[in-house]
Length: 352
Length: 180
Image 1 (cartoon, chains in turn brown, red):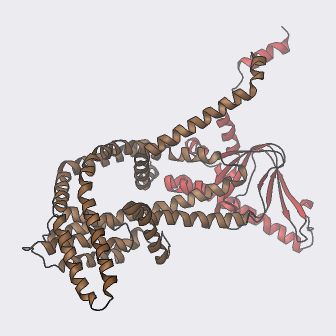
Image 2 (cartoon, chains in turn blue, red):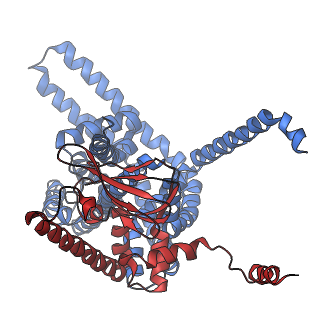
Image 3 (cartoon, helix red, strand yellow):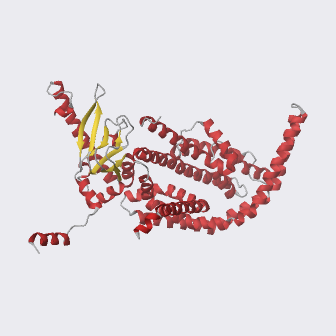
């Protein structure tokens, strides 16, 4: 038998490597298909890890604390979808139904602005930009309206994520260290220490940034919902949630968050609050966030130059729209940490 | 069947199966860092370690490189060397089973003060800053125990160094560290 196999030595080797390549390709395909579920599960594990670690440090079994935490979270989600979900959904529908009116309002502003500028700039230039702007606004408004059916059809995939992401998070939380350890064990001896430290630093920096941003956004969202409810702004919950989400984008986020609320008040003729009350409320929220919330949550975990952040956000928007804007800053933080650690390590290892 | 053969048979029947975990625990028990911890805590420590196999002549780390942690020798032989004032290589120690090295990197941020090289095929277990941080996060009690033991080891090293310095100042010790 062995002599028979010896003749086909190369064939067996090729078959083996072929199988390995096929398995890796299948794995990569699977990762690509399940990327949203995996990413959500990974993020969930990132957010919950400090809580699980605290439970473990107090003697509670890691598996038990992870299960309990995920059950509490699932309970919270059920409550949200049962009671708050329909309210938010109806408010989002209301807002989208009023999109044409907002478009008219914005177009009115542009016309007023144009008439003001017309006397100061060459006519051709103003007309060119005016037409471009109109087209852009039309496209974005239409995009917003057309995306609603897409949003409805996407509910199924959202449900899949809600069901499977906690399962992924469970495994990441319970066996994450073992997975990491196994992956690190594949690194050659010479670069193993450096890789280990690189992963550790990225994990600490990005983890603290993501967790801090999550708490920061949740606090801003809650404050916005509270302020808008006090000012009796219609669809306060949907606008507040949007403001909280938008807050994840540095510099641009707070302005984008305040805009829908202001537009809603401007459009409501019998509004309780004057139009300036909403920007003022968002200004106060921003002040509270900058003075108290941000230093306690995100703090200096980012250490990126403001100009670099702005350029990164612009590049992110260009590459992947709103999601790109959200992901730009954490990606830049990862990139900076990788370069910093690699530079110092490769220098000390005399590679560069 | 001769007596010798019979004894071989009995020892074969009642032989102890090789258990890598037990072997590692025996190694770790001899390391002062883990001498005070309980069996359950030892289990936890074992899960944190990184097993690495170095081939004869393979570099473990070089003097001046960034260091992130220490190594325990499960089997094999490791040579620790450094450069003297004339940039000539000096052997500081030849370490074998159950010994450890590189512990300064676990707490300090200074580059490695010596070079470590595997003389023969060596099985080492690495314990790094990231592992210690993780341990302090998840089990502060155990983390503190290890830190306390580590500070004891470091203070002993410092005392030994002071003694050597005194001898050196008194002219008893020569520049070659192997002389003592």
